[in-house]
Image 1 (cartoon, rainbow, N blue to C red):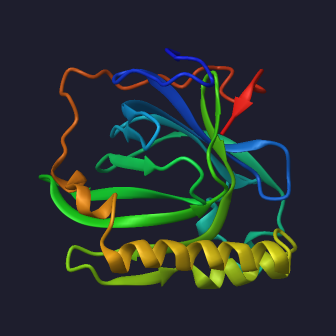
Image 2 (cartoon, rainbow, N blue to C red; image 1 turned 90 degrees about the horizontal axis):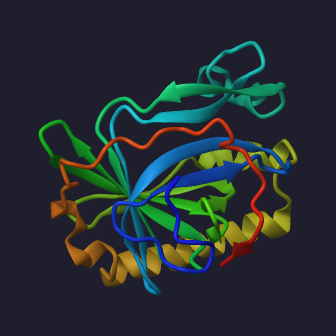
Length: 221
């Protein structure tokens, strides 16, 4: 993997890992190799290309997580599996310290679909990429600037399953309302025209390394 170190900024075109830890657990269960678009004191922007080999969680018997009824989705044993990101690619944007990242989705033919606010712990930088923990609750933002909460049922079930306590849930909801304030003001990154961005066609698809779940040697915010 090409890196610029855990505290330095990565150059455009560098390959890093965007990872998520299990909720209430130490292991990584999501890993996505991405290409750096921009990285500075204000924003980290990365591109996850179609066909990227990723790691995703599954139930221990191999059943897809979202194929399991919600009532037992967070209580059954899990494993991880290598898979590929099919469909169009995703542009991910994160500001330092924010408890969310903003993802841009397109339909085939580069028809812009929507922004997706993923509520999560602020990204922790390390020598090979960035790490976080997903907080279940999300927000969909549409080209007409309308928005709506997503996955509130999963957010509630995660609390009942003991994956987050009431204090964390309250902080997550507060972070969501902070994101809504940005949406209502139509501030960055929504106002920055990222929906018109396109990846460099010469960029190769990053590879998933064998040690994708390695422990960072140095972490910074």
